Image (cartoon, rainbow, N blue to C red; front, side, top):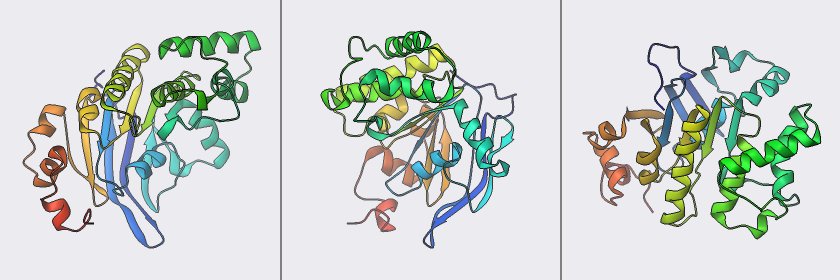
Length: 262
């Protein structure tokens, strides 16, 4: 679903910088995500993709710059207000990040019990609705360890949408999955975007997934966005760094700069 360029951005990072132990990870990063848009952020390992996503949801505060979501500046919020504001997000972490001690039903019910006043009957209904959205049936009593990698991701998606969020964030949703399951997961993200009408940001290094689900692809390099455009525009980029990453070549400016050198 494409965003309306005439509206203010749903998410706006403005000149965001962040360092850890003296190492600069984000260096004046700016990016906008329109309401209803699906943006995929790509880049090599250590380029700040996950750090960017955690800034968007307020899990990390920037050293400088601003993170504005739905017109609210997260940098100016108290911890209490920020915790409440995060309920507008649904986030699916790598590997699903499920609670191993809970079964599937309890995992999805967890945020509903924590953040709503729903009755147990209402919670049960909502859990079943979420499982239906991700095409999983009859797994409520199973533990995460009893599920395949692809099924765990889908349970993670179901939990992420349980509070009916306006914004969905996916952190490497296909890492560790085979190409067929990765394509199924990508198709599910597309279907969820369409059915729920969310603003969606996904980070990945899987270009096949990126091109399948994105309205717009943005590439991070050295802490900044160096290219942004539709999948077709991104494929046609004249930037040699972008082309090396798309093609997965060992030779090129990425490795010449020793960023990815062995």
